[in-house]
Length: 387
Image 1 (tube, rainbow, N blue to C red):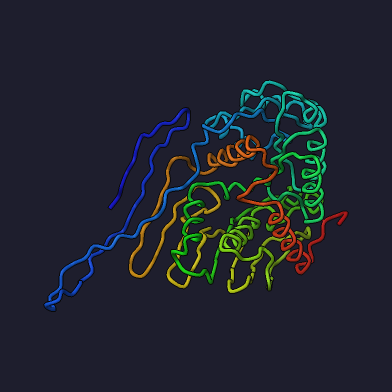
Image 2 (tube, rainbow, N blue to C red):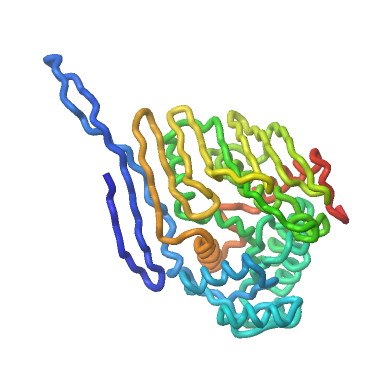
């Protein structure tokens, strides 16, 4: 049975369709006389607790490095929230101007320093290659700006710790743009784990893999730009395993780690398979630029299991299985990269609340995940210049 609430509009954010599906089956139930009649059993999934992104306090954003992901981020902000991008900075003036023209950005700065010094900018979004994150984030923090830094926060845990320490000392908010943590379907999954609906989690699987053919000069292949599949997309399943562990009260630091993988001719990782253990919980994770995968995520517990739909890192569905019952929560309010708006709305609310980090993705957990990624790269033999 499907309960459908359609055409709900709140401000500029239009809920295209929200379907909360429940599965019901009839089971024979004996009466006192020995006869049987049917009892309807209903398995329900919770609604996400996130408020409408359009209701978040409005901040003025500046964008560093206006590339592909920055374009999707800004489009999502302007389409679904009250956030406004007011400035952009690029090393290529023509590229910066083209980005500003496309997205209605007021000012184009000729340097990153000029952007972080712009008094009309409240928060800086750093969308450059991983290798550049520390310098650009630290400059923004030194100028008193809040920062949203594309994942991963930095190419290694030591450099990420510089950002974390600087933000804490300055009293500004720093957040890794792990947008998956802020999506509605992930909050549904979070509640399933918090309430113990599937019992104690024992096994997690997650993948993000795609067939990617690029020249050796591409950033994905370049060690100097912290290339490789692990930091580019493998960070999603690695962070997902940490999310499950910490949600049920386990430490983010693995107790055991097994690594298999292969490298490109340029010396970065092209495929990685991981077995990650936490106390009482194991995770099987996979990432690749050699082959596609379904990119689902699953959590198996002692009483049942829960799975996302394909492409778990973006807006998706959640299906719960307990006994012979199943129920699916599906959310069609936004698709794919339009879901980037949720993390921006969350950041704006945290700033208004006086927070300096995300309660859904604490900075110490971000550092722990990067420490695990560091160990994975060490075992594979991937070293970036200057490390």
